[in-house]
Length: 430
Image (tube, rainbow, N blue to C red):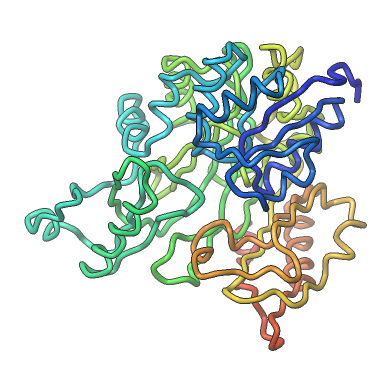
């Protein structure tokens, strides 16, 4: 890669494992990365040129750090909760920022985002009126099961499923504890197809880069259903373009999105799409790794370039982007762990030698402990594999091969892996 940014300094907010690929691509561009977060042990810090323990929510501390290091640009990593801080720090220092305060105000809170979507004919999950007072007249209208969520957190944090009133009250407490704004929503618990719609923006042009199907675990009763993997393109891609895509593009344009990357998450039930979440940043699912392997352009590079120059470069999305992946089939395979101490991991040796596996982002290692607080959110993810194949059948076989090969054991020799999903059934091959 041409190292046109040799010596430039980039401040990256957040140090989780998913941010490591962002750090690595910046280094390949000749950039000195500075990663900061509130946890000294965050993995991305170990890959950075420099690391600090300034919390990503400490805006004044971040501004002081950026001035101290005389950074040339600022970028948020893979963390929704840090996008508001990213916007404020960039604005305070006059650095390029793909977000505006208006966009942040809409996307940072699930309830505000939901109201905005409805204005453009984009439906959200049916919701129940309920506040922290838990009025009896509101409680009696609820039909279980329901999902309780904090309005301003992601990755499953603070989200629980309730099957009765007692569980609901407990879930409200959990959601409020995970919410900085002390707000929550209660929605119908959806048991249907789950999807992701990933968009790339450049100079006002909106491109649907990926439309894919997600598969989640139902093994952990009462918890948010953590993802087990995804397959690209979605079986519903044609219907999505017919019913929702234009509405989404109109919404993005009118709220002012010009550059950046954005994910919509939605359920599909009986011919309708129900959007339930968004993220205006790179995703933990990392569709950009599949796009890089298939299309050749890299969203990480585009965002880094924007942070340093205010331009994402000369990429022509209209020509180079394709949500149907140029006829190829791709997917992500997640491995989720139960509570316990990781004593042994098997099966990864052959992964790195398989050219179909374009990336393997490992989050947990031998010696790590999966705690109670990690169950029901993405902290229990061992790794995410990104796989590209020539056909649907080849993708299914590849998934099954690695579902069999990867094994994780605790100190007593018990398996720590949650059950995976039936990929052939998911891809409608059986």
